[in-house]
Length: 319
Image 1: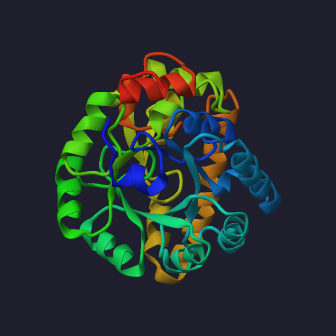
Image 2: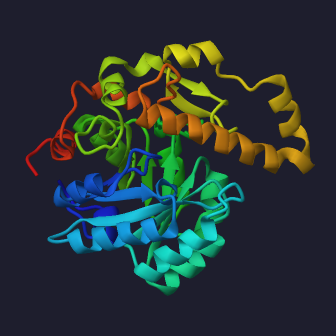
């Protein structure tokens, strides 16, 4: 596989980032990702304390031998009360890159660049792409409508060429990649690389229940639905019996409160905390109340495999 702007930027063999996934990503997965010649990323919110986050960074730095790159994802809006402390720990310890989501990345870019850390920013359209490029982002994560979790609304066939034409920094496509054919498609559209999450949920190294992993095997593309009930922001989940029971739309009281400018941010924060607790239970416990986040690319997931084998399926060769 030929080098791209992403492989050059992160000094990796393949133009793939193992996407950060709440409660799924962990150091074991990222270490295997680096061994396989790709980059790995973990949400900082996967760690309850700053000390735990610091320990994870130290572990990854010690394991980074012979290539690969690692980073952390930061939620940079007001719903993440740990943001400033997480940013400080990440900058103190040093990582290869940060991926920002759901907010203004200005402060992250400023502090990270002081330490030589690259910053990639999630965007869903050209408007946001222009803003983060102007702030000094090193690359754009183009979250398209085939992504898992908090996805965009624009198809990759439209979004990627549009951002590539209008931007002066690399565009990384997020969503819709589950095999080598999908990867090649995104590269042909002009992407410098891809961010891949859902295929790694059903990895041996993922610290989620076997039931969650098996759901990614048993369910398919048509079983992915959008819900507003997890964090207040539309999110893709597997349409389990519990999701069918509670529905995917906000209740009338949630909708009313979200329209009130004074209350909106507090409602979103409460909904985020309630929703993430539901996701936590689904990811770590075998209960009827399952809220399993995933994207349509699980259609390529046929069995639970080691991370190394998943990478091989993505790149079409031994790693």
